[in-house]
Image 1 (spheres, protein in one colour):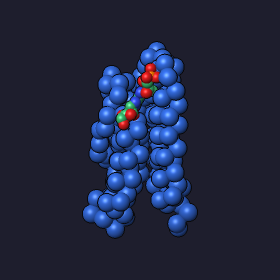
Image 2 (cartoon, rainbow, N blue to C red):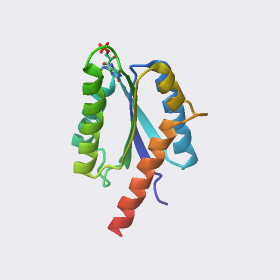
Image 3 (tube, protein in one colour):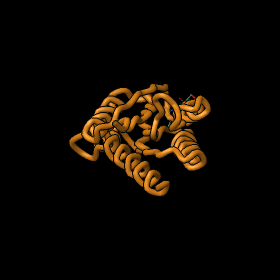
Image 4 (cartoon, rainbow, N blue to C red):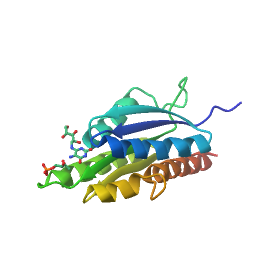
Amino acid sequence: MTKPVHILIIEGRYYNHIGDALLEGATRALDEAGATWEVKTVPGALEIPQVLALAKDADLFDEGGDRPFHGCVALGCVIRGETSHYDIVANESAHQLLSLAIRHGIPFGNAILTVENEAQALARADVNRKNKGREAVLACLEVLRLKRAFRR
Ligand SMILES: Nc1c(NC[C@H](O)[C@H](O)[C@H](O)CO)[nH]c(=O)[nH]c1=O
Ligand SMILES: CC(=O)[C@@H](O)COP(=O)(O)O
């Protein structure tokens, strides 16, 4: 029997209520796909690429492993403040995550919201509205499907 797809969710919890909604959307989508997952929680978006790098260094994406991860989904929310810090957190988190994903062939879906205000964040996290947690899961699973197809 083939093992179910196993996904590493790394979530930044800078805004807890937004995080709850993103995680609900992501895990529901994984359930529907018959996938399993493990969640690692960090304070903010800038810690998410660090954890993905550490997981890669620990060989957790190695298909030969006992319980490898087949992909990664990042959840988080960056809301613009008064200073330029927003640009660093928003751009660096996305850039570093994509770089790691591409360099190491890790199927990856990004639901780190980058928004102007809380209302925009709520609309995008809410499972009954834009449901970006789900969108990131579906993107990750689609890249995994293509990765496997390329190897055949
Ligand atoms: N302002 C936001 C942050 N900032 C925190 C950083 O991500 C990081 O935790 C801190 O600089 C310590 O290294 N993080 C978010 O996820 N969202 C924000 O809006
Ligand atoms: C995106 C952020 O880091 C943000 O919360 C920072 O706010 P500020 O620019 O007002 O310090």
